[in-house]
Length: 355
Ligand SMILES: Cc1cc2nc3c(=O)[nH]c(=O)nc-3n(C[C@H](O)[C@H](O)[C@H](O)COP(=O)(O)OP(=O)(O)OC[C@H]3O[C@@H](n4cnc5c(N)ncnc54)[C@H](O)[C@@H]3O)c2cc1C
Figure 1 (cartoon, rainbow, N blue to C red):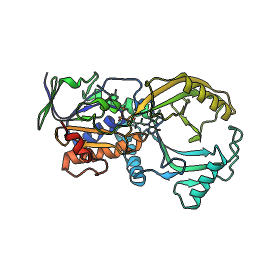
Figure 2: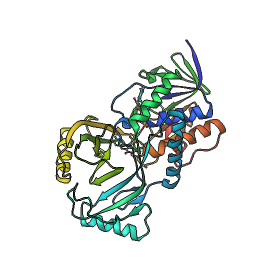
Figure 3: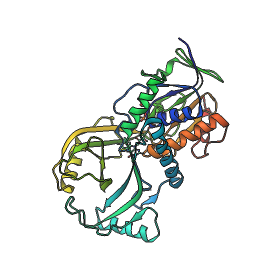
Figure 4: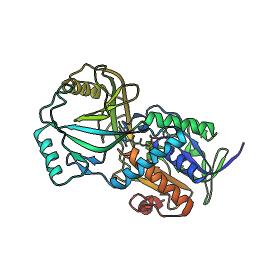
């Protein structure tokens, strides 16, 4: 049976999910093809939105705009999917060294936003071993990615929008103003396929910089649950079913995307030194972040094959970037309103136009 739609989406991670939700809102017909891979970046991610980054605690790119937009976008999900999948949290940054403490205090003194000191920097000694006090990072949020992805998937199935299978790039036919894939005819195709785009015939020349991350899922029965993410080199993040996500590594060079014994041993040793309560590892996750060399996303349509688009390159920040740029992309489709130049793939017109 032939299906005709406006947009064919490839991939249902955080990008494909928000693209679907935005297209729904705009009344644009679409179909999604996603093979249910278990260890995609969105399924392995902690789900944290943190407005500051790095040792110098600088505010992340566009954060004021992104935070306001993301909070609104997740809150709107309550009306569509029955939950916001978003929880405000505070990050307790336990300083691993005296230098890190000084860096925090200096940033605070400079007026660095989102930072403050707790009333008592040693009130966590009942739970953790630490020497140099801690600071707090505010306006952070935790996204329940497994819950969100499952709810979006359910909705797509109910609406008969989801093809649960592998997309084969070799079977895609692209013309100027339409594409065809098996029985699907669409005006446009948009790739939200995460790291698979690195070998996509249309976008493989974009400067992707794959980054591997691993995490452990642990059980800490005696740990009192709070709306807090604890950090000291590694992060301890509340996860579903009263479990905790512990991670992560950031590897630019790696041989495979699988979990490694080396990470497990190193992380368990660090956790044993840090935590005062016993824990047990119940799962070990690994995936590759679709990061980019200049740390900016890839959004928009191919400069030559204008029926072929992309929403990708979210790197370490899919939870805050995907809602915003899915919206920009759909606004472009519906009204022609331009995509931010530093996110639009048109900035790579030269490299994408080469034969
Ligand atoms: C360990 C780790 C921790 C992280 N922590 C955070 C965090 O705390 N906060 C944050 O904001 N970000 C975090 N990230 C980054 C975040 O995961 C990514 O930015 C985001 O998930 C990317 O989403 P995506 O939709 O682009 O890709 P993906 O999640 O990879 O989704 C791509 C989808 O496309 C499908 N697909 C691919 N190829 C095909 C094909 N040929 N046919 C059919 N389907 C296909 C896949 O099955 C998948 O469902 C973390 C990443 C990792 C690895």
